[in-house]
Amino acid sequence: MASRDDIKFLSNPKIGQKRKKYCRFKKYGIKYIDYKDPDFLLQFVNEQGKILPRRITGNSLKYQRRVATAIKRARHLAMMPYVADLLK
Amino acid sequence: MRQFEVTFIVDPVLPKDEIQAKANKYVDYLKANDANIVHIDEMGLRQLAYPIKNRNSGIYYCIEFQSELGQVVDGLELTLRRDEELLRFLTVSLDKYGVKYNADKRAGLIGKKKKSDKKADAPVAAAAPKAEKPAEKPAPKAEAKPEPKPEPKAEPKAEAKSADDLKKIEGIGPKIAGLLNDAGILTFADLAGADVEKVKGILADAGSRYAMHDPTTWGQQAQLAADGKWDELKTLQDELQGGKPADSSEEE
Image (cartoon, rainbow over all chains, first blue to last red; front, side):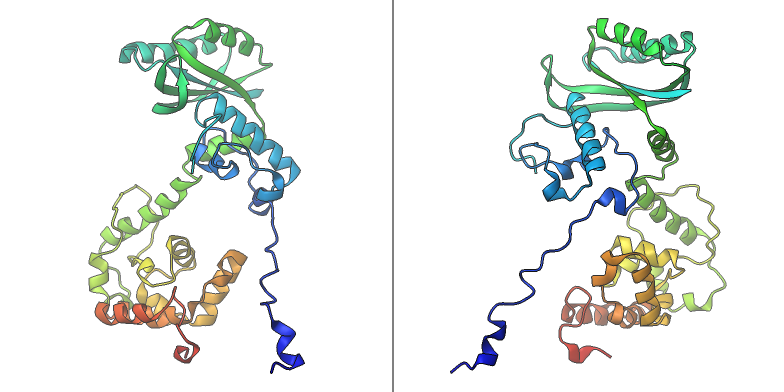
């Protein structure tokens, strides 16, 4: 029979820990987001081409705004789609 | 002096000289209006992400220019708007970071170009006459193989010794190979000679991203590679998982 000590780690205690999100622009000192680089911007949209929220990407507010602007510019220049299916 | 950037897409159906003339027309317009052309980037024919005017591709041009107050932009946009052979255009004013980014990009410092530069260093060095380092000699086989894509660039970095392809070691990718090269570890012999703590230090300096990589077996692998024992290296790598010992008993 399982004693009290065995129940201590019924589930892996490390599973619940989430990796801390961070703003990659702040971390790596990226100051300018190029709207002519669709491959990079693709990291910030979902597969329908929608801009991902901050709570998922972890961007700081300042850089989320700039990412959004860059994506919108890229869309205007037909470098990224406005609507898509299976983008990734 | 403010810096601007205008990107426009020209109809790809036009004859080639007309497309060129179109780009020149706007450059001339800018010059005539006291704008200072910084750079003209012909991005060439690209696929459009969605059709515009029933076209699926377009020829992209990007002109960077400086202007005192930016009054040119109004006139420029008016002519761009009136041009029916343009699919799209976008004028953007650049902040100081944008200016720096574009300058760096032209100098080839940004993104993929950075990597290819680093790679390009190696074949140049390999082409140079064999250096005085005796440590080189046990690895003649490796010399013949390194760098699958020789892209010789005139980067006269005085690296006397030729570099091995460190990526052959399991656990080392292009990123880490670059780090090691920066730290002066260019050949298998170098890596075999460097002790584990030093390599760990290099990885730790490069940031927490590399913390997961475990260099304990790299020295052993590098020794085999340096001696040209590729078959033994292969069997060793089969036992390893992602460059780490499969079970801890293998660790020295």
